Image (tube, helix red, strand yellow):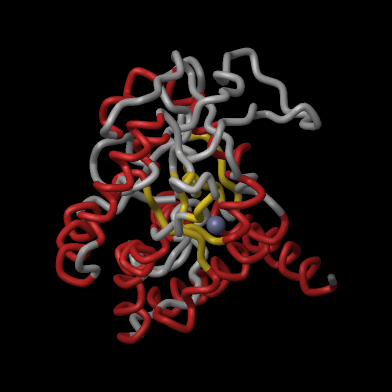
Length: 299
Ligand SMILES: [Zn+2]
């Protein structure tokens, strides 16, 4: 997970240029929610019949996909971009548009010694059509992991118009678009393919909590993701070895591997840093990565 620092400015400009009328429609729909005090996708006509209101946040999904370099905002897996890839993505509401359900769920075995804010019957209705409440996510991260959960360390806030108004909630998830939240790379780090909180609780309690919750919430060490990161890091390692021999192509690729555009870029940068700072540790990881890939390929 990484930050996309200029994404929000770029998305706003792109929405004005490419999704003409969207901002006006969003304003009208938000005014309706403000009047009702909740999100809805149907209204009652004067005849008493229910009339369906089409949701249209999906219209701006391609813009988020592009600004995130076609990577899931949470797991950094690259999906197909463009019109053909659209179906692989969800437009994620960072703060849920529907009622908030408790996390960890009743079935979960995760235990914490700090509060997660519980469930809430009210939804974040004024943010349902706010561009700063959106991100593009893979379907696995968005559902079932994200779903309608939103753990917080402070008091739940509702009915305010801008995501910045909710800072008092002390969200335990991080919003990676723009510069308004912590940098995810300052919360989550990697040892090889494995994600872990960057800080210990003694170093920085709040950042440790956020790193730990992000890791657990999206199960960032789930088998499939670990296997994909392991395979990717083995390719990175091959490139690193060729670069050591001065191969021009590999040296050029090494620069590209530090770009935010590549898949698993937080994980990749951590691994490349380890290759530079402590080569024996990096070498010790290689058989582990190979074993993870072997197990995943054996099914
Ligand atoms: Zn994902």
